[in-house]
Structure formats: C-alpha cells, structure tokens
Amino acid sequence: MKMPEPDTGIVGRREEIIAALRKIVPPGPFGGGVIVDKDSLRAYECDGLSAYRQIPLVVVLPETTDQVSKILKYCNEESVKVVARGAGTSLSGGALPLADAVMVGLGKFNKILDIDYENRCVVTEPGVTNLSISDAVHNHNFYYAPDPSSQIACSIGGNIAENSGGVHCLKYGLTTNNVLGVEMVLINGEVVRFGGKHLDSDGYDLLGVITGSEGLLGIVTEVTVRILRKPPSARTMLIGFDCIEAASDCVADIIGAGIIPGGMEMMDKPAIHATEEFVHVGYPMNAEALLIVELDGPEEEVDYLIERVQEIAKKCGADYFKVSESESERIKFWAGRKAAFPAVGRISPDYYCMDGTIPRARLPEVLRRTSEMSEHYGLRVANVFHAGDGNLHPLILYDANIPGELEKVEEFGAEILKLCVEVGGVLTGEHGVGVEKRDLMGTMFTETDMKQQQRVKCAFDPDSLLNPGKVFPTLHRCAELGRIHVHDGQTRFPDIPRF
Image (tube, rainbow, N blue to C red; front, side, top):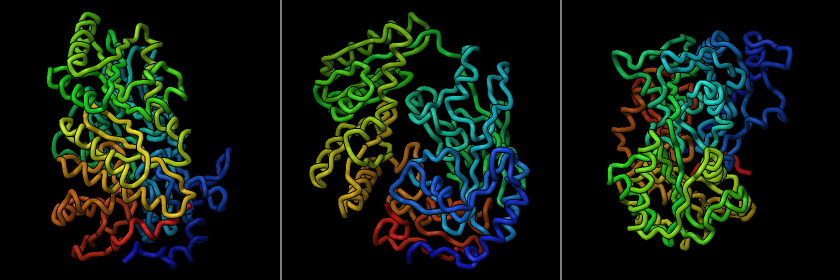
C-alpha cells in the first residue's frame, strides 16, 4: 500500500477546524494566527528537502505554550493529525506537511527568556535561531557550541528535533550534549518539563529520548541550553592534499595521535572550486582535497598542536598549509565551509544533500566507492563533510527538469546510505530520517528493533497523530501492534507530489 490518501472526513471538516483554531489563536496586530489561503500556505509546503511538496490543510501560528496546549488537545480530541515546523531548514523532509494535518508553526516563539551566566545556560523559546544564542552572549565571552551550517536561519527547536551538529561538534558535541532541559506539550495538551538548569536529572533519560525525535513525541515550547566560555585562543589551518585518500588518512592519524580539534572538515575539489568562486576566502584551487582544522585552548597549547598537526599532515603527503593569523581570517576560513551548500547550488540547477555517518577509518574506501557510483549513475558529486566524526554530506548534482533524473538521484543516494551502514555506520548524522531515509530503516534495524522504537512513540502519542508518515516505513498500531503499511517499498515516496 501507498501512504494513505488524505482523510476525506478531516479535509471535509476544514472550515470547522479553522474556526476552532481561530478561537484558540485569534488574529493579532500584525496579521492572522491561522493561515488558510492557498498562496500563503505554499510557504509551508516543504522543508529544505524541496523535492517533495504538499500544501498543508491549515497552518496555525501560536505565541504561547497555553495556545499550543489547547491546539494539541483539540486535535487529539478530534483525531486531527499535527505536524510541527520550525524554520523549515530540515534536509530530510521531517517537516513535510500533510494534506489532512494541522501544521503548527513555531516562528513566533522567538524570544530569549533568560541568560544565566552563573549557571552557564540560556533559556529560550524554540523559534530563536541557533546563531542568535551565541550573539546574545557574545559580549560576555560566551557562545553556544553546536553550529550547523544553517545556523543563521535554523531554529533551536528544530535543532532539538533533528539533534543537529555542526563544524564544532567533534570536540563539543551535538545538540543532545548541549541541551539541559525542555518544556514540551504532549498530544493530549499536557505540559511537561524534562531537565532544567541543573547538569543532570534523575530517573530515565527522557531528555535524550526527546532530542532527535523528529516531532513524533510532542512539541517543544521552551529550551534550556548550555553555553561555554570562548577558548583563550583559536586558530584554523587549511591543509591541501593532492589526493582525497591522503586527506582521509590524515584525519585518522590526527585523532589517533590523541589530538581532538575544535573542528575538522573536509572538502573535495569540486566543492573547493565552487566555494572559492563564491566566497573568495583563499582556498587552494589545485588541491584535490582540503582539510580545515581548528585548534583551540591556551595559546601555548594551540601553537604546539599546530606544529603537531603539520608534522602529521606532511607525513600523509600534504603540500599546502595556511594558518589563520587573526580572528577575522579564522572566521573567513570557516565562512567558506559554511557557504559550501549554496556555493554548490551555483554550479548545478539542483543538488541533493545526503547525510550518513561512518567510522573514520573507512573514509578512503567510502569516498572511492562513492566516486565509482558517481560514474555508474552519470551524476557528479561534491563532497563536503565533518571529517572528524565521519559525518558525510555528499552533494549529488542534477537537473530536476530532466525526466527521470530525480529518481536516479534518489537511487544513487540510497546506495550511498546503504554503503554507510555496510561499513559499520548509520543512516544519519544530524539531518534525521524524515521521509528521505524512512524506507531505508530496514537496512539498519530489524523489525523487532523498529517495534521497540515505536513502543516509545506509543507511550507519548498512542493514536499516532504527531508527524505521521515520518521515520518508520511500517507503522504499527499501538493497541495491538498490527501493521499499517504506509509505503509499499516499490518506489520511493510515490505518494508525495513532485515539482
């Protein structure tokens, strides 16, 4: 079976649902709290994985936890599905709307509520952007460590949904390592809290369960995150290689030497060229692979580690070195890496960003086999990834206007992800499963594994009203664990409209 067709009963009750939502979220001074016209709804029809689109039934924009509670309580009582949405920068289709579901947009939850330097934490609403947290504490020499490339736009609530990482996650951890507490609304409208300003909580690690749950368990309305002191010194190195295998070996050797950089990223030649032509930061255009390595800590330690890394890189065959000499130059080096995705968009009409994680030692093999796949499918690939923790982001270049090319890209992307699992890795590092990897879950998990995961969802959402159709290729009823097939596996997402 395909994903179920929209519930005609719910769609037929659209006006009734809109009227109920307007009673909960009335129009404000700057516009309505409920969006209903088709043109305005198009702004919500997809997330960053824009190959699949669907107009939502209706969008509601609450401003308070109480409003979110009443919305979910109403939807639960009326058996109406709900999809939560942050900034829409997700790259796995996790925020893809449904034609018979209410979309809850959290863009109006945009305030930082408390900055507590003594306890080194910030309490914020989920719609605040990732970068805004660091900006808010910058003058006191603090920052928030997880820094996705989309940090200027992505919301902290979305970061929790996907367990986002960033270029500095190697040393300082993913979102899950930097979130101390959340306030969350359950599907029945109950408001619960997990964690807080304290460093750890007793009992089950429910905060760990919620982080990375992709909107399947509840809607987060408040977040407490850890902030860190800026290191006394931080310098970034550009290291060029004449082959990508040598750069991959260098990554393993640096970690093997007991050196944990603040960040360690790699780009291959297509990505280097696209980025340099876009941002002009001084990347070596003749290099086949570029490592960007940041070392931080006391100045004497940083100077020593720079020498150590240079020695290791030379043994691996590096032929280009450049070390930042100022804070502005360090920021410039990273600006290129963080602009890699839009830069690649300048050299291809479309690109499909993959996300998988592998053991560092298998980097050379995986990159070689990906190159072989690229030739087989006749599609170019630009590689940009978090080399330090093995989180790959191959960018498959294509043209959606060519009939059949998107389907070929999907097949190619699926093969890359299967390869990640084959070598001992996982399907996702930070983008989540969403719909993109939903039908590949069986390559990593057994049926028993997935039933156990779904029992957790059942504990929070017994009627499967929150973000249905995501993550699980086969959904089991909570009451009897009978199967409801949401996709027949013959083709990827045949039920989701395309461009």
